[in-house]
Amino acid sequence: MSPSSQEEDDLAAAWGEALEQEGASPAPAAPTPDSTRVLNQAEIDSLLGFGSDSARQEEQTGIQRIVSAGLVSYERLPMLEIVFDRLVRILSTSLRNFTSDNVEVSIDSIVSLRFGDYLNSVPLPAMLAVFKVEEWDNYGLLVVDSALIYSVVDVLLGGRRGTAAMRIEGRPYTTIERTLVERLITVVLQDLSDAFGPLSTATFRFERLEVNPRFAAISRLANACILSRLRVDMEDRGGKIELLLPYATLEPVRELLLQQFMGEKFGRDSIWETHLAEELRHTELALDVVLDEQTMPLASVMSLQRGDQILLNVAPGAPVMLRCGEVPLFEAELGRRENRLAVRIAREVRRQEEA
Image (cartoon, rainbow, N blue to C red; front, side, top):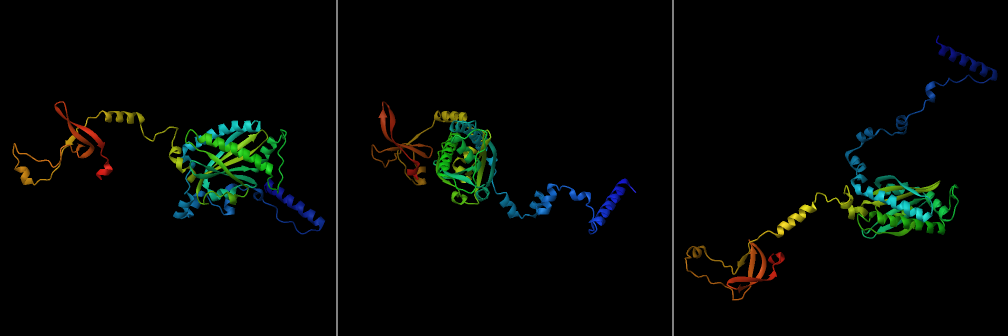
């Protein structure tokens, strides 16, 4: 018998003697060593009914895969990440001046999701600011979480450093708190306008402040949006600001956001365009002065001989047409300058008139 088996037998015998002394029922089976083993994530997912990603993809139909992969990732708008980086730098300086405290702003994440999914995941209580972009004629959403709300109120009203902001659950926000948060939102929106400034002129105007996500619906629930989470740290206080921009709002500047770097021309070469324009201006064209046009039988044309006269059906002084090939360009007057015939351009012939 192995030492381990001997120890188990001794332990079982000791339990049996103890139970007999207490007059209790026989002891249950000793726990096996595997009963205390910690389950890994794969086993937990299996118990809860969640399979691996590959297994779930195999079980999904084609339509389900299209719907689940229907969102456009924000990486397809590379210039937007540069705009958010610029916003972080500007906002750090503005909030330091606004709170007179040491403020650090950083980007937590930039993700794409559906508008309805975001509204269902907003951590309450929070303040949801609806703003409008004047030039783009569309709306966006700015969400300030409760931690940042109480931290800003505490800082602006002279709270001491090193003490956590007081948070009272179960009560609505007061008028003072809403007013102070509106001032914070105004600062953020102004900095957001400055961040988009080098790319496109955009004025982010504050519309209203809501505390219920149902009243902050600015888009259809199935529409795709870009969510940027910003973390604001004021030493031992702080919170999060979430900026939500629907793709419909960014559509007017989509071409600009697709740029890899500022000023990208998508294959256009301004130097070549200038050179081509200069060469076209120096190109020589042959202009024909058309006095009159007539339709004649082929037999009459073939019977023409040297010295025959063709009568023109126009009166003296009638305007003539200047053409380049088959394209009419100008209407002019026929005259004489020194010993040569000359024309004076009267007006330009438009293509619409010809049509």
